[in-house]
Length: 286
Image: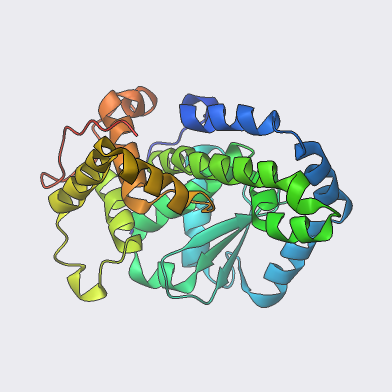
């Protein structure tokens, strides 16, 4: 059962957007070739292709056919003050979700997410996806998803689109930090967010009743400390350069930084639902 949440009527995405997101977006919009790639994306209606592919293969969720699943979306939209998009479920047993479409966004949840996560964990992930919609991330996200095909289709595309590709992937990773904040504002439960990250990070189902929050947070601390070695920092940069999401441990640490900064409580001025097993004071600078 989803616990009662504070409805954030009139919430503006600028209230919680991560500064890395805005900085990376500014750099992206000043990247040479972005207009060429964007015009190609629009002209060839790649968004419509993705939409047809997803809606033709997956199950649409409504209040009539799967009311429990639909309730997650409906409640999350009320909390974050977002217009309700369409919701689909696709087969996949990893804990994952995605959003497609900038004109008409569609959220897609993996069936494993519904089975393996509790109500508040699902609300965190649904809120994350709605955060992308609310912050108007979707056009550039769709471009990031399709960029490899665009490079192949445009004459000389590898030359024109390579800077755009790097900028898109970098911004896409930074935008995930913003979406995670929206997810927390939606579920309003820090422990639920941490549990979701741990499950996404690979925690076996048999260990769901034996979660060690402190060791997960300590892992994030140790990961950050690797940057004191310049070579490790370079390896991190290269290994994630073409990824659309930051590493899960990094996302958890960055979200905890936001909580500990006091900025979360400035939006929801009430005690955050937490567990004593979660480290209360964590300060990491990525």
